[in-house]
Length: 257
Ligand code: PEP
Image: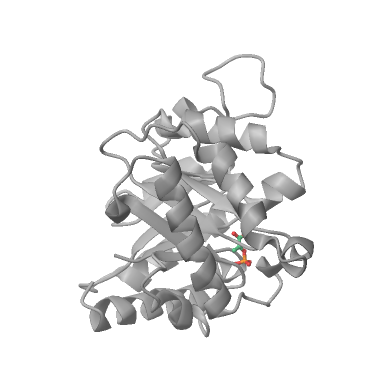
């Protein structure tokens, strides 16, 4: 299986979100073999988008989650609130949360632990800034993000482990990672995750994110170590997103996945 995760970030109001969700549904309609598509809209439109997608194969997720069940946490949205509106997935530790809003390794690991303990499937986002890659420390940096979030995690038997490798410098930059560098990092992430969490390899899914578009998606998705892509900017343009979905469908068909 290949996964296409669409991170709409803080871009769309209700009308635009509903229209885009309908457009994405149309791209999947009638096709026999399609990737698993999960949309991550803004909190305010989760309910409307869920209603639109109710009878489709698409799933819905949130862009972040609170660590606590309820209480005096102004501005946070709890996991049970996300479950309440039909979320099945949640992004944790997205680079914009870490670097724009200062979420520490500790905060990210608490969000991840809370999501693992719930019905949601968290998608742990990791990735190095350019200085770390230039200094030859990309794996050291990502390794620390993985270790703080995954150490001691006990994955419930029915759950899968999702990790998105998103180099900070590749996000929204039009400079996607080189396929060889990305494959090398995916291999490292898989090995590290297996050392940290007791989980069979078949349940670890590693996605690439960072300036994926309709033109380059196929070159990432055809790699065996790439279980899918997390798409930001290009997921807001229906033609681009359709191209990415079609690339995944071509890979699934060619590789008989
Ligand atoms: C993202 O924000 O997760 C992302 C990958 O963005 P973009 O596709 O725009 O680089």
